[in-house]
Amino acid sequence: MTAEVAMKVGMAAGLSFQRGHHRHRVVLGKDTRLSGYMIENALVAGFCAAGMDVFLLGPIPTPAVAMLARSLRADIGVMISASHNPYYDNGIKLFGPDGYKLSDEIEMRIEAQLDQDVDISLADADGLGRAKRVDGVHDRYIEFAKRTLPRSMSLAGLRIVVDCANGAAYKVAPAALWELGAEVITINNEPNGFNINEECGSTHPVGLSKKVHEVRADIGIALDGDADRMVIVDENGAVVDGDQIMALIAESWHQSGRLAGGGVVATVMSNLGLERFLGEAGLQLHRTQVGDRYVVEHMRAHGLNVGGEQSGHIVLSDFSTTGDGLVSALQVLACVKRQNKPVSEICKKFEPVPQLMKNVRFSGGEPLETAPVKAAIEDARNRLGKSGRLVIRPSGTEPLIRVMAEGNDQKLVETVVNDIVGVMAEIKTAA
Image (tube, rainbow, N blue to C red; front, top):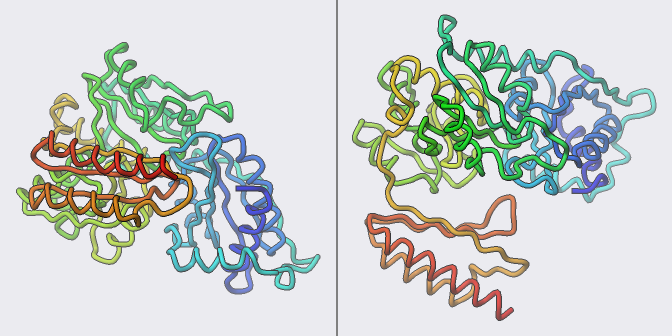
């Protein structure tokens, strides 16, 4: 992701989303990576060249950008972030005027314009866009998040540790929880451009577990770098993943008559235990390919209002158009307050089926297309049979292949994953 690429994205996206004859506007947020400054300025140049006014939001969660795109009647929303990745990665997330992520088709159309000469379509000298910082966006998002709870609900009496991952929610998450009445202990809320997601946040909750023990908190909340995902830590320091959180919210909403569509949307990575738990409650688990965008698309197409990923992306379409770590955490806290029981009891909804995932890093080539790897995968599927699942997929954000298996027999699960990873390692060494 270079400044040149970012500027071209701004020009291409700006030209693609101009509708009508009003002054076109884009809302632009970012997380706390050092490269965000460079990419932000390059995008501003591209959008202004396309004739769009740019509203600069500064560091703010991804779901806030989606919300503000609708609230400010923007033509497009942009978030500069690489989510849970290290600081040296970065990317650009695009939202339409409805606050939803763009479809693959629209993104491919924008990408196709990056290599084209678009100068002839850019704005004239008197039609260039303007850029300005927007004040009060944090307050807007905090109020939005608070309104997702009943007006009478208070979090008074709860001691909460929140891990901000040195990322985009380092200001808004602690403020929202405190304003709702909780006692808040905040960690990893001092971003310096380099420490986003560094041994902290939803992908590294060990520090949060220790802090929860240290201060005897009722619950810990770990966000990721752009705060569109989260995991929970109970009072004993045990991590509660997205599958358990979806089960908790789905059960609560089902009991109150709020759950739409008779089920939950998750990805192929979600545990079989979630599927069995929902089935026992008369609910269905709909599976999609990995990516919260595909979860949201399925939810919209089939009228469901709870979905997400095991990693902690939780989408509650009654409130948001994308994953929202803070809003999801508030729904968990609402269950805690209503039931007045320990988090360890409330959030353990099912016993997970043994599951193991390992990552294989690769550089070039198509290892999944080689004969030895294909044979190893076929053998693994046969050994797991109908009582287990095998999912092999390339990562969408890193040069990794993820190998995941699950089944009732933990030793068998470990064996088939290790066998596949071993074959891939041999091919990589030989290459």
